[in-house]
Image 1: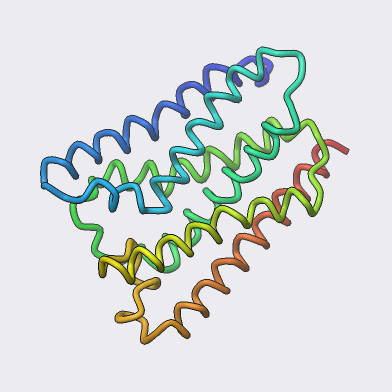
Image 2: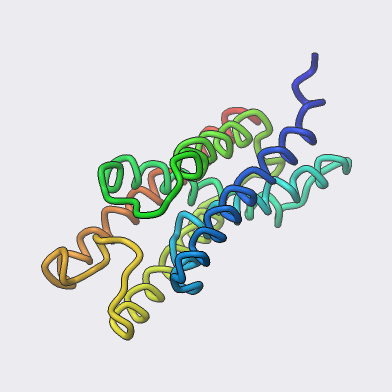
Length: 202
């Protein structure tokens, strides 16, 4: 069977999976009386929802004769973000207390979906050449997110991740080091993904 015929059903299935997983976890979050904004302040949740939307849009776009440069940029942002989600969780958070996070939801959002979104990138690479400008666009979302987390955290005293909490890591200087390291992962991950896409389209 030509694997290209599977693109629509696979993108729909894996596009719906993180929505279901995050939706179930959100209901648990509400039942425990926890803050709604906090739930959607986790980069994991935001990135998985972006990946879900990207896959669902991709299922529709794949029915057209060709995809758009805008969609390829969206794919790049979602894919780079999910790669970072998988790497950062495995390196910094694998042994952390995950609270009420269901094990199966954890498996979906931290392990399965990063692999799925990368597989989608490799099996169906972007149609348009992605350049350094698009790579820089992939860095905007994490920069905005970090700014939001630090401002909101200083205001309410809550941070979604311990490495962004100055009281845990020993001040904003150490947060800057973590931020630089994670930014490096974003940049390196993007460079590798863009190189792979270029090689596959060559």
